[in-house]
Amino acid sequence: MTTAQSPVDLVDLVDLEVQPTPLALLLLGREADPKSERGVECPGDLPSPSDPDLVERARAAKEKLGDKVFVLGHHYQRDEVIQFADVTGDSFKLARDAAARPDAEYIVFCGVHFMAESADILTGDDQKVVLPDLAAGCSMADMATAEQVAECWDVLTEAGIAEQVVPVSYMNSSADIKAFTGKHGGTICTSSNAKRALEWAYAQGDPASTKVLFLPDQHLGRNTAVRDMGFSLDDCVVYNPHKPNGGLTVEQLRDAKMILWRGHCSVHGRFSLESVEDVRARIPGVNVLVHPECKHEVVAAADYVGSTEHIIKTLEAAPAGSKWAIGTELNLVRRLANRFAAEGKEIVFLDKTVCFCSTMNRIDLPHLVWTLESLAEGNLVNQIQVDRETEQFAKMALERMLALP
Ligand code: 13P
Ligand code: SF4
View 1 (cartoon, rainbow, N blue to C red):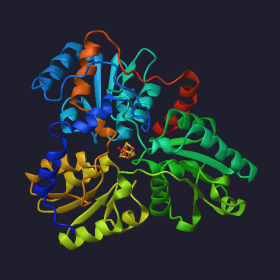
View 2 (cartoon, rainbow, N blue to C red):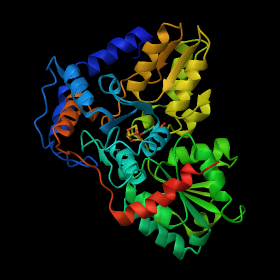
View 3 (cartoon, rainbow, N blue to C red):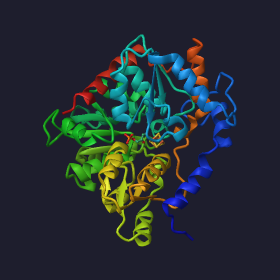
């Protein structure tokens, strides 16, 4: 049974979840977690989450570091962390912002591992990118490994189509996958520029025969191909790295316009057609706005679709009195519900149950304080460094993205 969720319910529910820092997440963040992208123990002594001086300690350490530090915060970060971000944004904006601060010695990335890797690739050799909790990975990025993607390329080569294939990789992928993409003439994309990336990719050869290998999020790939490029669902096939030949015949590969990697986001994967139908029944006149990492049926049933930055801009421009159900991570939805309540905009979370990104949530105030205080004392901690060869090819792919019209 479900109950209607007003913005007040939502705020109460969420406050219970995040304040103070949930013990389970803190323990996960401190200890080795073999299932995470980078399961490592925090090497330092984390302050207690109940320390009443955490906010003051973070402020003092940041002040001591001054211009030497630049703190980036992804929209899915907790409020307790986002308050210390010099800039906030979606993954595209943060990649650009990191590249635009060549003077900062330390880039503290409050986000997840692949974002910090991208920042390292795009910043100067003398700049150090730091991830406050090394266990902040991304389950979607983990769904495509370098070995699996190399094997896929062999399958495409054997099918005689590799020369027609342009790889387009979502930002949410490891530096290795970005390097593969750069090496094979492809580009990176984010949820804000996926359409432009696909247009670019199909213009790299004869548009009639060119195919895209889209990694690793099948939903962003399919949604962009069908909604924005006018392809049919039948033009898309799904390559399953756990099956021989991706589970596809040579004919299926030859006929496809989009070869979608079988990856997904477990957070956005929770939204269903039923969530959309439920919220429409509960809140007459509600506008449903979802992230393109949601399943195709959810995106098809929604009124609006876009990246986190697009979601924020849409709500900023919405008239007073309008009602919105948002299908993306809960830290962001809760922040937006609070921010726009004063303007009379009613904003609810699309799903009935709480849906944080657990790896984004690993970055909490104790980890941020520990990071900033360590840097202020001259101890470089949790540096994210991509090796030179990987960096060289990954940068080619990232720069192609930054140059998209
Ligand atoms: P954007 O910030 O690009 O909208 O992506 C959302 C996301 O899942 C980041 O991990
Ligand atoms: Fe990865 Fe999904 Fe979390 Fe984004 S929201 S970091 S795609 S698991």
